[in-house]
Image 1: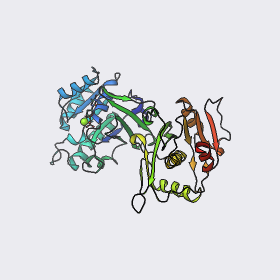
Image 2 (image 1 turned 180 degrees about the vertical axis):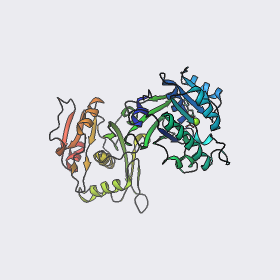
Image 3 (image 1 turned 60 degrees about the vertical axis):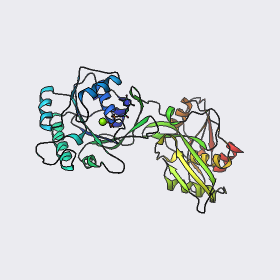
Length: 384
Ligand code: TYD
Ligand code: MG
């Protein structure tokens, strides 16, 4: 079933599944209500029941005016008692139900107050039963904080079919919808949105926001062609290498595995003779995203060398290769897609492993594909 949101469809594994229970978790204020209200309003061909225990009908109306949508097919119910909710469901017979949020519901069968673990569990169980019996997809919104202060809905993770997490950095406008459990699809897909004053915009070309716009060349920046699930995207790696002010040099990494960073630094030091042992190294993936793709190794190394040498890398250059323990540049999967994405975004040169070129089939690429074998080759070509 189509949610009319390409990003949500992708993360769900192709769309909504009849009879599925989906938990959408995220920190308060991240945009869960906005996302689900927007999705509910855009599913014109389906009858949606949006149950809000958090906001008044008036507040919801203001919100839907803000996102400039209204619709006859979306019923808003401000109710928190499950017995009343099921009564309304009987009458309305919705195709899809959204509950905002599971923490606000309470059922007569449990004594404790709304939001308590036993209420959350019982209310979710009632909705699960409804979902399975009637084959209606049900979305449960749950407030979850990283520090575990509001861990309530976490207990539902094993109960529901799909767990989506809506996250983002408050410093940036965009939001990432990530699947962390999915009985019906892969968990490696991401949906990307941007919070605007008129609601969430789907970002179908993530590279546009993940690469910072700059007018002049700066050192310490390298672009990697990476894959998130099946989708290629270009991301920006930023490194800062400086002489350690006090004793032990610091190594810190945001968005990239710190152990892998230490491994790459050891390779640069031991295999290639770059003296980084006494330097502080800070690494950051722009945009606050986390990447777990060995194909960004070469960009990480290039950003570090660029900062260390204080020489910038031309903005039209990008990288897609893994780096091995002996400093060799290794091939990566889906190289054609990575190259094509880079070309599509106007990059003029991409560094890849020499061993990645066998059997690749690209018709007259406009981008210059530069095969490299060792880190020294890359260094020579970039800064030599
Ligand atoms: P909200 O959906 O209420 O978050 P949650 O349900 O996860 O708690 O989002 C709230 C934030 O989003 C709030 O800070 C206002 C902002 N926002 C916009 O920037 N643009 C909009 O169009 C809307 C509706 C909200
Ligand atoms: Mg909300």
